[in-house]
Figure 1 (tube, rainbow, N blue to C red):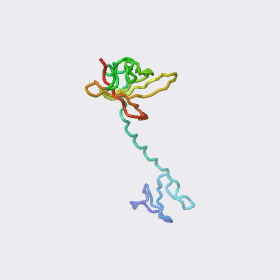
Figure 2: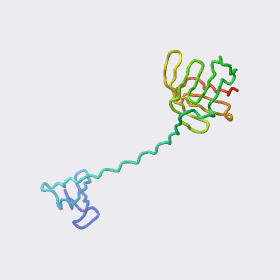
Figure 3: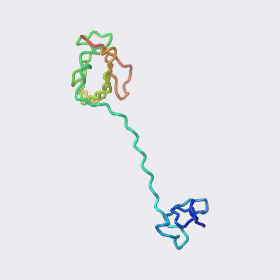
Figure 4: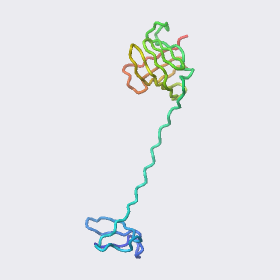
Length: 166
């Protein structure tokens, strides 16, 4: 086995090249020991840890508010609905609740995605059961159409847009 300074010709080389079987490269800080170990092997050199990769930038989170914004509030019914209180697709949106025909959702949090879209975390109850859900409310047509959808993409079926009732 032969050791030679790597890229330097004097004995003060910081790193040396080891011509070992298999072409293995080894690094050694000569200033620490000044020579090879008695058995002919190079003393172990500390291996510098690779710097940690920079954390991936996080997507900005939507600002949270305490209540559903005013422009989403009101009484809504299916596009072809009558807006009558007995309509089974009627939806009433208040600052703190979504009231459907057979269930009520109490607002736990609201994330404002943009002026026409919010995601509402709801504690739901209806027909003797309780559950939580995240609902995305989207306003279109100048704020006259409200489309609620499952914010987690688990909703089966077609979204049911609702018109604003007077």
